[in-house]
Length: 333
Image (tube, rainbow, N blue to C red; front, side):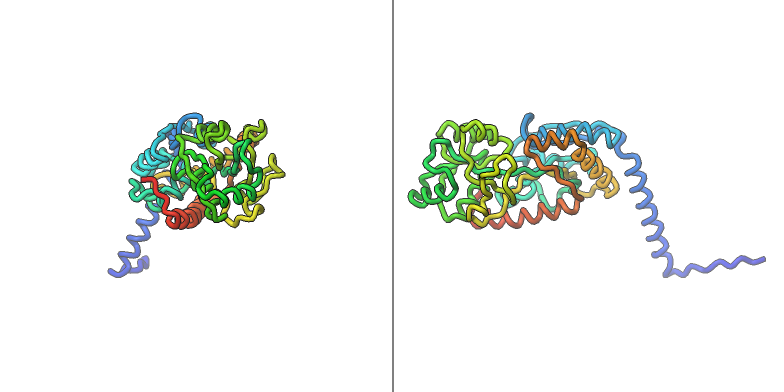
């Protein structure tokens, strides 16, 4: 008995070859995801030990390791507003074993602040997962002659450039947020940069500088102790522990909320199945009741979402704040 075998035309060979190649690629991807991880994953933090990002990374690390079945080792590589860590991770293999807890400063602000960067925030990274966000609050020295944002604006208009504000460094979130408020209010303030949020807040407490925009978690103990006065919250809604303090928009200044998010990214070209596995581990970690409570106690708001949603948010922030940076001419180098 003869068996019918359809003849393959010469035209069909490329299509068949492409089909086999696609099948092999999908099989390889599935195998990679199944085997991942088979050794420890490194989570790089672009800040020093004890910083907000470092605390978040260490809270995540152990729980992520349990989900992945391999340890997650936190490694600090601080320096140059995150550029040291960003450059390092961009050059790492895209195998999922080297990750970065990147902040909005590195992903969305630095491209506008630096004329030359050794990395491209849009092309050199694979987004993995959102992690947390944090609100900011504008505070003043307790002896300052203004106790509300309206009073500050009136005082600044009466003495252009005469009121000073501290920041954790030129181009830092604490710098840009205060400049945005000043721009929205039509006032001029004098910037005094410090090497870190701690020294900047201490300068406001000590009266060497009059104002600062600070992460709420850092400023709240000083507010509660009466060492500084809160003028406005830079968020979409009021802070639960400061119900009497209006948002900047409620105080009459139409400026965007200051983003304070952290997200996990890796080198460009990571396998999607590996990304999905890592995303699931991150989401499980921040949903853990104990970790969730610790984050909220530190005024970090856990963020659920996909890698694609995080990329879209970072790109939107880069557009908003990049335009503002260009308009004001703020440059770090």
